[in-house]
Image 1 (tube, rainbow, N blue to C red):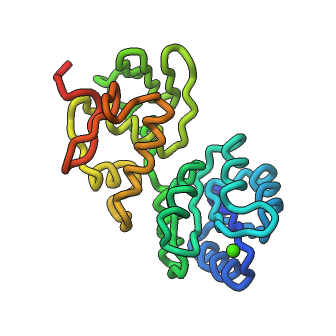
Image 2: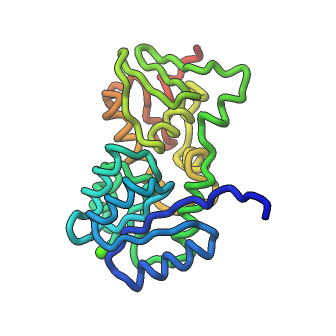
Length: 241
Ligand code: CA
């Protein structure tokens, strides 16, 4: 048999067994390698030992809840995390994202929708890979005391390393690719998530808020990421360099 690239690994952490089984069936049907954990501690152990590419993580779990699991996973992995929330309650969503989730799906959801979200994350072009091939783009972008190493996916502020999630890094890489250009939320979603992503564009604001916090950027007087009212965001104040 010709060698196949290994199937992407998806860890499903969900305590409702019928739902977990349904999700597993759909993900496996899409050609993904799937494991299921039904408690927070088991999910965390599987994340450590199996090193999945994506974790589908229920918010309400026995033992450790999804937020605690996500926070713990982020200490050793930058895999993608899709949170499952029980209500379209924004607080759940925001809290989930603040611990480093990349996307969220609200229950009840169609399994196909979840599979599409997972595949979107797995297809997401790595900013570093895409940009590294562009000859006229400097490998390190500098904005004052902020250094963005696109190929190395490293960010330094005032000489110190800044730990960003993949989504935060991709947003920063996208914004900094065209300094001064105003990006709409939808265009940022097209670039960073996927043109097929459907959901609340407020997702962008949440990730920008976390990015700003990590860059110690004051939205009222931004040094790096500026809000463009009625449009979205831009890198820098808009003067050409
Ligand atoms: Ca649950």
